[in-house]
Length: 331
Image (cartoon, rainbow, N blue to C red; front, top):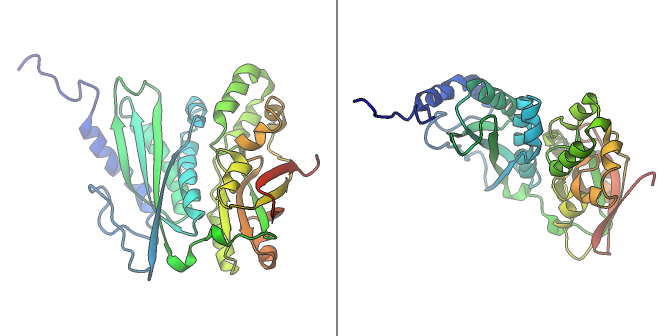
């Protein structure tokens, strides 16, 4: 009958969306080399068999890429956006001592764009395959009139599991324990509202190569956590250094004591240009300052902890005075 509208005419193509689920199957299968779903991918919910755990404790987390996403879209770095999304969620799960098992994504877009979405999924699958976490499903929402053309909304969700005995317990942290810092690969996915403001006001100072270095994906720290386990080190606490920097992310781990930190100077290309426009104290509360992961260990575990992953460095010790105080090694 003339004049009747279809959903597709309103801007949503459910048939194309259904086809996309099949098209990304290759990437989904990459994340199920060892662990597998209990049931098929693409059902209404994903299931996982926990019977291999004797006393399973599950943990969950959700996060996004923040305003870094604007620059990643502008520079057509969709695979990096997918990696950032996974790392921001998986790293949080790893802080508990848990194994990241299942990952789900939410993609909001004005109109379905198979090529761009597939590139996002490919980036996610690269990181998920690396840390043995299954891409269990997600939601791709076409929202014409709500999400502007060219913009993508992105969120991630991760579910992990651990034996109760393997859980990290920050309550065991004590004065004298040592903080081991592990390098970040870039600015990661925090502080970009401030970075974008600096770029807006001083864009001419930053070279394309420097901006490319800043935009590199958030590092996955599964290698550090895995090596700690292999070497028989059970950290008393672990922190993923995100928004709030070293002080705020570490302070949440302990009460009634603090830490004095001395960190190496950040060697990221061009980072001195960025920091020259940021308040000297605020930079420690905004950026990871070159340290993206911290493990707190007993003195006896320091030698082994320093060798975990590509290797860490001692950045400080727990002290009786409350609060986290941070300075640069050569300042």
